[in-house]
Length: 234
Image (cartoon, rainbow, N blue to C red; front, side, top):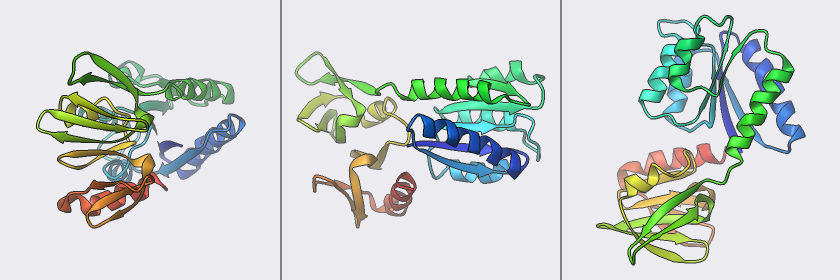
């Protein structure tokens, strides 16, 4: 599922874009979860709670902070997803590219152009994410992110639990997490990272996986963990 946030000056404008994207996705048998926002404040609040693979913004959206300023702040705060600007003119195009957007489109946006950009997005997201790990015994191994159930750390030893084996590696959880896909993995405890796709429920204080294993959830992250899991399956 691809999570998309659209923030436009009017609800009609946001819904129009959302409708076109849903139509394109249906033809490609891809599932989208699209949320529309009329204000940057509302969008900002949701970005703190969940991850979007794509954010579509009007760079001239006002209200004290422009859409372009908001996008710059998103990048400064570590947003790694894709950005698309849909503007009334090309006046801000050069400055917008400082935020490394997927595209900068000028209204009226043709259906053909939007379809091309969306197709490019699908091709990027279609690549299988992987992470390169340093084995404790020496050498490295490349593991597909989707094959990882969870990772636990003991000092500098990382036990990477995959579909087929547990790999003993070296490194830090923070380092590995930075290489994993945004929104798919969650650091539930100082010693654990879990792949949310395999989590079936959360109890006090652990995630239950579909293979019946449990991954610890820190007490001070319990409420957040429930929200993260709920948002992931929404």
